[in-house]
Length: 367
Image (cartoon, rainbow, N blue to C red; front, side, top):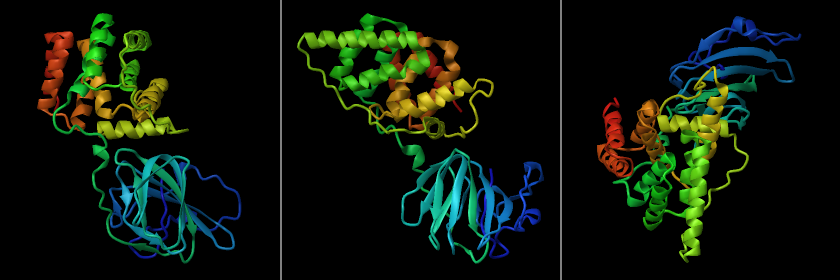
């Protein structure tokens, strides 16, 4: 995981002596013999690293380097006289051309930067990124400009504004009833949720979201009970609003998307496996839950976390570790003592005082 820029002044990168000459024979260069250098703080925010690779002989020699960007490390604004290719080899990062929006780049993406185009590139806010850079070895001067000034908008993609409304709070008793398997309470919670403005699409999505927290049997029972209740209401002549289905985002890399979404919600690096000895769990959590399910825009991040919170509250103190993590996510989404008081009161109504007090206690224990 490393990177390249053409040397033009003493402030730019020094060449790694063993690998700057054009090579005329095939060779394998073990990582152990590569000379890794740190990036110049004069032109980077944070500290990355890079290693020069052999120059490729051609009509015009091509210089190559690999570069590693730890989370939230990125270049300053700069340009290349003859342009540059970036081939992303690991992780998720960012690229921006002057005057255009920031773009997300990830493993497998190739970026061609035209000559003299002002730009910057580097890691994501919470995700590492590495790329190989390919540039003409001669006459490709780098011009460095100002530091990148990024507004911290990535953390505010979904945020709690004001008090939680009745529609949002109505999700809590629905999730609690599905978790406990109480069909009578679920029917009442569904009816109240629809009265408070929830749609069929939102209710179905909310119960489906519980799959990762309460398991397949309870989720399937909940979906079946919800469907039966909606059919009963339809037979009674009640026309419940269907709502908007989730947008199809196509053939996305849900693991990479989930890694990025989890990083944004938790405000912490997530590029490492959650459990190294259980890669299937890491994949399921990132690809299925935070990748696919969170990409479904018929239910927002705040609403999904409310569903999760009620599910965990209903499971009891044995899952307080997970409860704490999701209360932290809600805090990152803007939850305050006032919002937790609303949530705890709704949980107390649905599950009893002990469950609500447990939520209050875990919340108070957050740093």
